[in-house]
Image 1 (tube, rainbow, N blue to C red):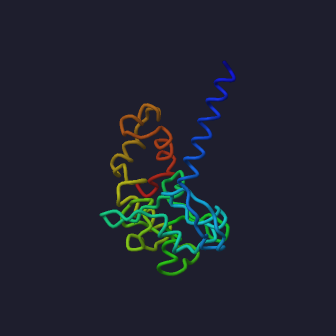
Image 2 (image 1 turned 90 degrees about the vertical axis):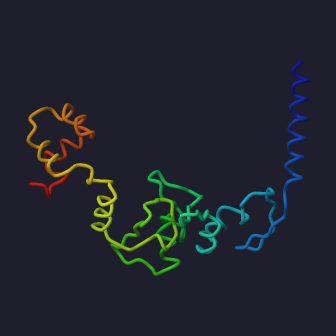
Image 3 (image 1 turned 180 degrees about the horizontal axis):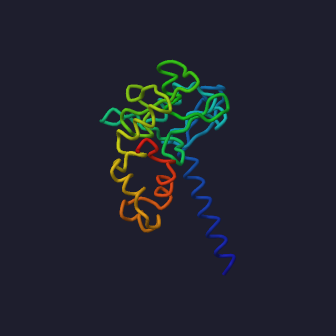
Length: 193
């Protein structure tokens, strides 16, 4: 019985391998000019991951985006936990929207941030990006309804004057007890009197 199963599995593996072998094509790596085999229909452009990282950033951007009808160039490769695209430059990680800005416009200075007009984190279209600093980024978040722009100054004053425990006040304002504590300690909304 076990020999029959082994024989059947070996035949399945052999058939699968032969099918895969028929669906491969020979390509030449644009970075090192080495010939390699890749599966037909894949977007693999280089012979290895290390060669792909050495590919010029402009080619990597073009090979890693989908152009949507709203004008966004959505990054399709690696996305970090915050939703931003990630690329590599000189052996180090770099945010894809920063790499796009530097490639299509100019190098960034210390303290400069690349912000999105479209508010779409994986977008790398240079027409949807603009330069700012940390303060501009915070103001942009508030103006788009994210970050500290959730509560009005009157609500902040009400939170500070409420004697109840933070865990009881938080559901009323649809926020966390940590946020309530930070508001009361003036770590958040310190600009409200």
